[in-house]
Length: 313
Ligand SMILES: Nc1ncnc2c1ncn2[C@@H]1O[C@H](COP(=O)(O)OP(=O)(O)OP(=O)(O)O)[C@@H](O)[C@H]1O
Ligand SMILES: [Mg+2]
Image 1 (cartoon, helix red, strand yellow):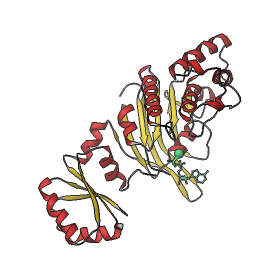
Image 2 (cartoon, rainbow, N blue to C red; image 1 turned 90 degrees about the vertical axis):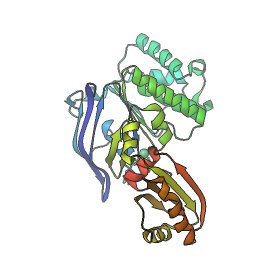
Image 3 (cartoon, rainbow, N blue to C red; image 1 turned 45 degrees about the vertical axis):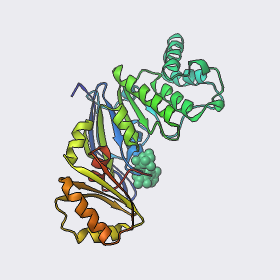
Image 4 (spheres, rainbow, N blue to C red; image 1 turned 180 degrees about the vertical axis):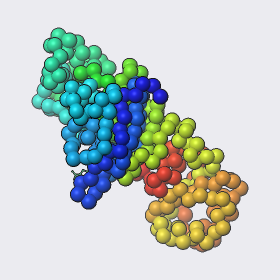
């Protein structure tokens, strides 16, 4: 790995009985773009909140550029945050917002103005800088949120679900911005529920659930976890229990169960020749199947294998 910028060691955080982070550990190199993939409640926002200094009462440690992140406020000023809930003033225009948020970092005004103009161009809002934000679309607001996170030239940018609630085109543009930020040398961690996003924008992917990392690596490395298998997605009007009961009565033939939920299950076959016999077995037991898909190993299969559940909301 490149020079390390962030080293998270055994971070744990509970809210009463609820464990949000459980011995969460992760390293990040300079300029690396890490996609943190996890379903609802996995602990993503909790992690980002701790790193941004807004959440306390945890155990474990975080080193930023080799120093204790929580010992020195100045270190936190080298981190940019793009929160899940958008943070800016609707009454101000985009330029005014950047000037306001940048003003919190004691950047000389002339320099700040230049930086704000540059960033508005980066996030494709240059022509809309003087319009009230109230008139912005969801995607435009998200892009402004990113510009605010970058105003003080952070060395690490943390984005919590930066693409939620916007259309496909706006998503692509945000992913492009994130990738470019990484290319400029800023390390990036962004959280998402979307498999396709991490495939597009990240140099490394971490899969987390229940407050801990279950697997991490490049896309190719992660796919190797599933191995050379055919993935069969079975959908229909069945319960998880009914599916499991029928599957238990088969001899399996080297089949692996990746996930079983109501209405959908995923199976992995090392030998594709075993697929027809299994399908016959399922149909023979009158499992109400409406759709079958055969897929090559992909990130979704890795996710299913590691968490036993799908990423959908
Ligand atoms: N303020 C809180 N009080 C009590 N429990 C909380 C609080 N914030 C989070 N939790 C719980 O901690 C766990 C992790 O929540 P967190 O918000 O970090 O997950 P997440 O991965 O960001 O989820 P999402 O994808 O829905 O944003 C969940 O079980 C959640 O219910
Ligand atoms: Mg969250």
